[in-house]
Length: 126
Image (cartoon, rainbow, N blue to C red; front, side):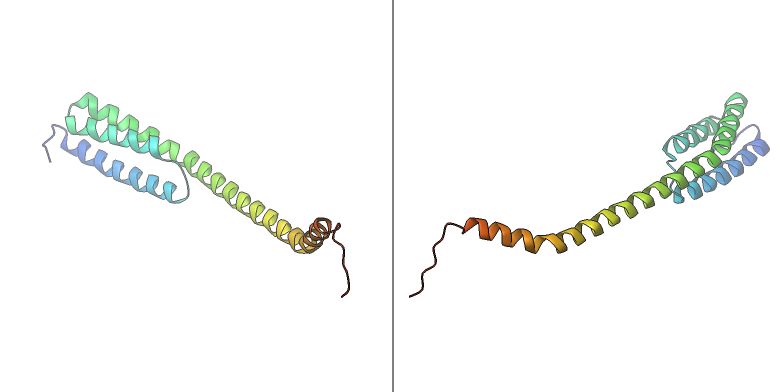
């Protein structure tokens, strides 16, 4: 690790970055799309590695922005998960109804098609 002029603030920033990263990881496990936020954290980490005071302040600002966006991302993830569950339930219900209709009407349909296909046949007893 490179030495930085503001060691204490750098170390505090690293700790804050780790906390935000773990919170972001938790949001992702709840179904949130965290790609943009993770990209922002990577940018903040790159700024921190440069070591200048201005870059550290910008990195701190980015980390705070990502941290404040996590509750919204988590809510979006939960909504997406609910919608996915609702979509799955709807698909299963439609498949169940289709299976019931096939079970009820397929034998009649098959016999009707079979009978129409053979209606011109003549049966003779020998």
